[in-house]
Picture 1 (cartoon, rainbow over the protein chains, first blue to last red):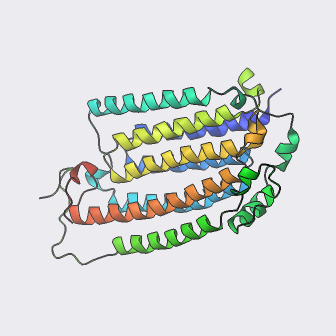
Picture 2 (cartoon, rainbow over the protein chains, first blue to last red; picture 1 turned 180 degrees about the horizontal axis):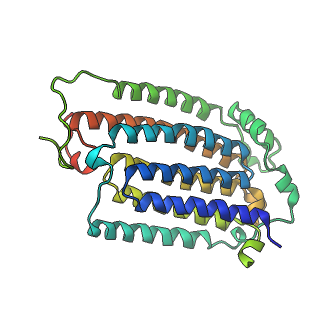
Length: 205
Length: 114
């Protein structure tokens, strides 16, 4: 009997990891962009399977629909001639592979180290039914009211249940400032001398 | 297949997050294209976001009362918004760099003169 939740998890996890590896091994920057889009779109499926419906929708809309389109624009504006595919030496690959492999082994050991993380609580399906439909609760939390934690039995934790109004305001102002700064940085300015087309990966003299 | 019969647990999600994170670190270390380095940063942020979502789901773990709940979802939303802001600024810097240096190779950008 196939557990269909597990089946779809494995499907999306395989797509995610395969395209993430493809981003690393691909030398062509356009291919990297396409693989990144596929990988992050598959992460959306993992979010849905973890009952995080609003986060999954935001991942699809903001990340895949916004940020990655921005990245693709960056690729299109800069990918010409020698910059489409740039190689590095095998020695650099070896060093990076050692560091990345060590980090991966460390993280994998940490992921399987706790026993409670390896057993899923499928019997308590009440918790599973409560999952999903997070939009209203997230909206109230961003406005400063935690409707999911109105009765916190531990008085030491009660102070931390104040909602997320201040971080929400901070991140809103931060986003505004960042976008104004980005528009200022990327504005088209008149250059005194015309930029000659690049002749190689070395900087044009 | 025994792999498909067990329910998904928190460790499965953590493994996916670890692979995303390590791929992002490798991508940042091995790419010479500035846009490629930026893609590595996106992968790292997504690995962290996957971990946040996994820790917030109560039905994935044995000790359900320790789940992050809505806090993990909100942190993931903040990560997504910060990633959008970071991508906008980093792309503006990359385009500015490309306009002044006529290259996108990060190895060439070892000086701080406009």
